[in-house]
Amino acid sequence: MQPETPMTPQDALVAIMVAVSASDEAIRTAELVTIERMVNHLPVFADYDVDRIPVVAQTVFDLFEEYEGLDALFGLVREALPEKLHETAYVMACDVAAADGRLGEQELRLLEEIRYELNIDRLAAAAIERAARARHRLA
Image (cartoon, rainbow, N blue to C red; front, side, top):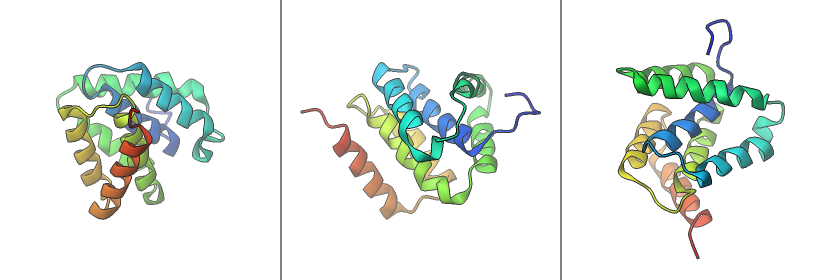
């Protein structure tokens, strides 16, 4: 993202979702559909310019190529995301991670980092994770 265009709270939410999807180096269709569905339907994105998604995604990809890029990403997210949206971000991250019906080691590690960086209560995190598994469970 250009320095003159700071990350918005919605950008930060998109960045978290893209990061989870890209964490295992295989962005799956189910994950992309989940991201698109959330951006198109959740109230937090009501006024969001969806044309920003590719810019945010490219920022995440670029940061993942850098040494300590994940720390830089979390710095941007913490700066842009108000505390009241921290659990929202974690819910979205868990939904993207669970979207394809499996959780890989990289996704689990990133979810753990997100919990830590956004200071998500362990009980709340466990409930969010369980709900995401239930929503995306295969028949």
